[in-house]
Length: 246
Figure (spheres, rainbow, N blue to C red):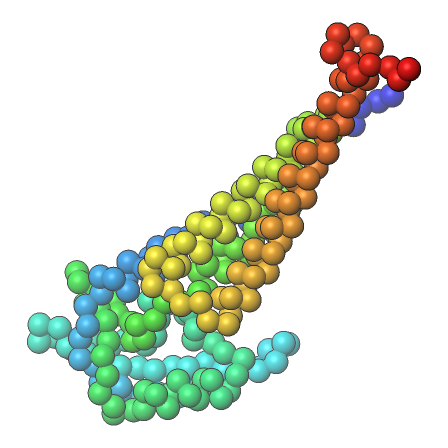
């Protein structure tokens, strides 16, 4: 019987792994950068120059953009910026007109406010001192594709392997899934994140899938251990085999 080449599965697995890993790395980098900016950027008095909501029509419905321009002064030099969050673009677009308008109403034109500027480069600043969960979504959501790619890769490399190897692959997938989840959630909480309803829903879904995968892997390995033990006890070449019934 002709053995099927694993090259196709390996390439498919590597492609899925690479694409997912790219998003995970971007999310991790943004999460770290966001935390650093929230911790190190210095508060500075600011004045709101303009504040408005614009609408963009898309195939998925209307999207509303909040544009707030503000000015601040550092060492006698005036600067202006439109960056709202520590990570540029995060939270700018919204599918809710009411939410966008609420943000604009909180920063009306002419109002005094506080911005946060970089210690070494006054041109870099943001307005809203708030930790967002968006970078962590970029870390957690691609894990579905990462697990698919890793499973295909491991299965292709060990094509035709024993059930024990298949159970081992399942356990590796579970451990990788859990490790990334713990790292992302741990970092979010350590830097001052608050588990309101959106992060809670995302973490509940991620944690639920991880729990199912881990329990399934452990049960699979336990069944295989019991099967191997029973087979050894019934093996007639085993001096410690189970005695035959009288």
